[in-house]
Each structure stands twice: as C-alpha cells, then as structure tokens.
Length: 305
Image 1 (cartoon, one colour):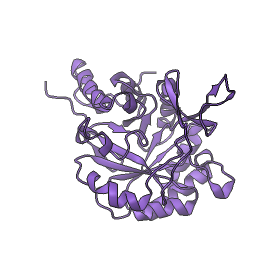
Image 2 (tube, helix red, strand yellow; image 1 turned 120 degrees about the horizontal axis):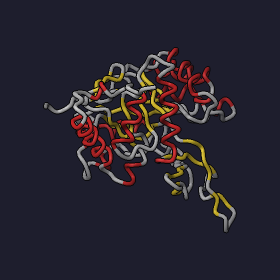
Image 3 (cartoon, helix red, strand yellow; image 1 turned 120 degrees about the vertical axis):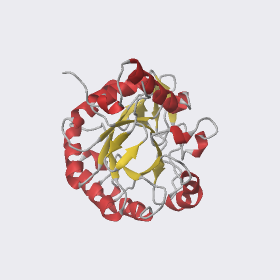
Image 4 (cartoon, one colour; image 1 turned 45 degrees about the vertical axis):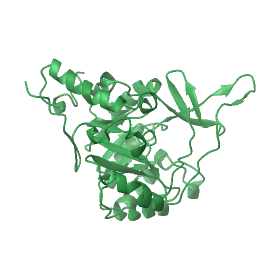
C-alpha cells in the first residue's frame, strides 16, 4: 500500500498535512529549528503581531494547572516593523505555509497591520485574533460580539491580499453566532478555540498566581470543550474550520478531524515536547495505514451520530 495522502485544503490554502503549530506556542519558528525540521509541518502560525512592539504583562505570567496551564503573556511581540525586517527573512526560506497571526486594539490597528503585510512574499495567510479588548468600546473583546467580529473581519479583508482565517474565542454564550457573523463578513476559514479564561490563587498569600489576576487556560483540560465547539461550528458554517485545544498526541488530533476540522493546531504540547507536532504527523500516517485508509480527507468529518 502506498503512503497515505495527508494533504488538505483550507480554503485557498493547500497544506502538505493537516498539522500546524499554534500562535504563541512556537515563537517565530526559528526558535524550534535546532530541535525539529519545520518544513515537515503543514504550516506555522507565528506569534501574534501588533502594529507596535508590546512588552506584555509583568511576571509571573505562566502557571501550571492540572492537565494544562494558565498564561497571561499579554501578547508580547516585536511589532510589525521588526517582524518584517528581523523575523520574516528566515520564514521566507521555509518550504511550508507561514500564517501570520495579527491583532489590534482598534479597527484601525487591525487594518494597519494587515496593510503592512500586503504584498509581502512568503506569507500564506493571516490569522486574525479577535480575543483582544477593544479600547474604543470599553475593553469588550472583539470576539464576544458578532457585529464587532464581523467588522474586524471586513476591515482586514479590505486591507489584505491574503486568505483570512479568524480565530474564535470560546468565552462566549454561543460560538456559532460569532462563526456565522465572521463567515458572512467574508472570512476564508475559522480557527478555534482560543484559550478559556481562568484563574489560580495562592492560598497561603491569598493573591492570584498570575500578576495579571486571570489568564488563558490551555492544554488537555480544555480538549473536550474544544472538540464540542469545533463540532458545533462545523455544522453551522460552510467554510473550513481549523481545530485546536489540548492536542498532545495523534488520537487527540483525530478527534478534531473526525468532528469535521479540516486541519489542527498544536499549542501547549510544544512546551512539553518540541517535536510534538511531528509526532502527531507520523501518528496520523500510521493510523491511516493501519486502518487501510488512503487519505486523511476520508477521516475528516466522518463522525457517526
């Protein structure tokens, strides 16, 4: 039997396999290059880029939790200008998809970052983080309101020549409403879920373990929530969905794919094992071979209900 075909299509993007690394967990890619070959990945989603450099929140900003971790990094990054001059040249030499995660605290900021990446070689798509607080609307996250999520999507699409993937927040009453609004606004694909809001307290000092107070929960603890939300959204929209949330091993990835995700992202697992994403790729290939399945597309959306 020939090797199974792992190639997938996410809107306009063709990926050599369905395994990407999640934004914020893989740096700008080069940080992991001495530990694994990034060209073997389906793609890299780089650390979120804002218009200006950001230092992020004060430490402590990462706390281990049962089956996961809380982070309040605060979207620290080098900013658009330094990304283009210092980080992108290395990424442009890769033989895999490079997806740039972007964010802003106003519609103008989102538009400016998207415009700054327009026409730039070596960028396959933009992933839009809409979990950021909108400073012009009292701090409410863009991704918690369907109308605001749609406006961000429209603004980015207006300023870019790249496919646009919108990353959805799980911290909403009904994620399907946000998904429908973003699809209607013209997004090419969706990725979900971002982290769940959580908190940890030091009982001796009676203060939060994170300097920020609360943070984003990721890791295996959130996987059942993520699989459920992916399943809900897949049944709601007609654009591709990229699933993420607590994927450590091949069978975790298979849950998302069977639920209907066209690809997956590996996040927290990268901190545990820098080769986690490659292990998942190999594991998917082994699973298909052992079950006599010719292509990963025969698995995607195959949930029996």
